[in-house]
Image (cartoon, rainbow, N blue to C red; front, side, top):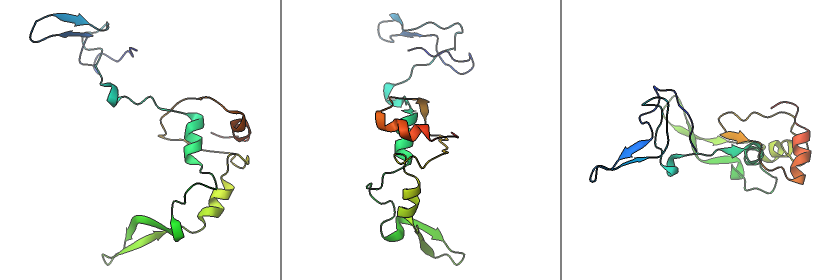
Length: 136
């Protein structure tokens, strides 16, 4: 798939020249000489669907606890005396209970920087969760 760029953002015009044979191969065409770029497939991020992002953000009640025993593992706050204190998370299960998508208790959500690029496949059980959202 070819995505047009501003001329100042690219580095190529869609052709490569083999250094050993001198043969030219054209992969795509651009209006500007520097209007395109070659990108390795491993560097691409196709993003997530909105439904996938919601499911990842709002854990189910039976999901593993983020802070077992009320303390985050490997997370510490620095004190002004230079010591460290573990960060506590009080009420993880009660917070999680108020954020259950399947129960329809989530009315508003924010998905900043979530890489959302499409709505995605909506399952029958997603309809309840999505129908209660008033603000996105």
